[in-house]
Length: 184
Image (cartoon, rainbow, N blue to C red):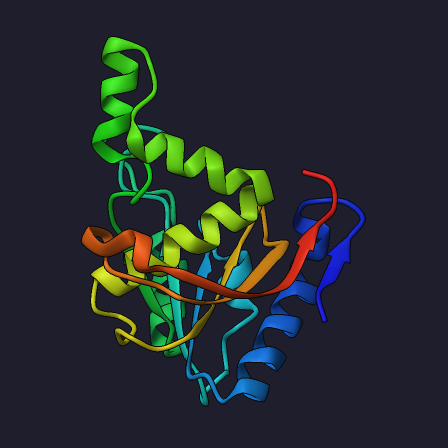
């Protein structure tokens, strides 16, 4: 059964993580992908040893050229705690965003991103980070996983999905919505 939060945002983070981990275990899934830039959400998963936890951060230069937003000490603590941390180009931004900034207009990846946002920003993020983790080889291909997303800080959305590699993106299947905000 899907849980709907009355509002989006960080206030739902702990409950979203709990629901996501519970559902992963109920289904016998082994992989959970979470977005986290500050480390707040990923930190909630420290000490979990029965699941492969992958944390996807903003890419280098997301806010300032050449800068990685996640503090080095936080990243090290997460990795020492068994969480894999991925910092890479965002699947639904990258070159399309560069074209939009330079030439105006909207391009295919941004159309996909905006379509996913019809279900909320967290849905878009959950799909995106799952495919990014798969492309990086941090989760196995061809299996269902749980992936989380958020609307700015923290997470408020959790999905069961089977991600596909970026070149096969439309083979991605959203199987369940564990939770999401009603307002976004």
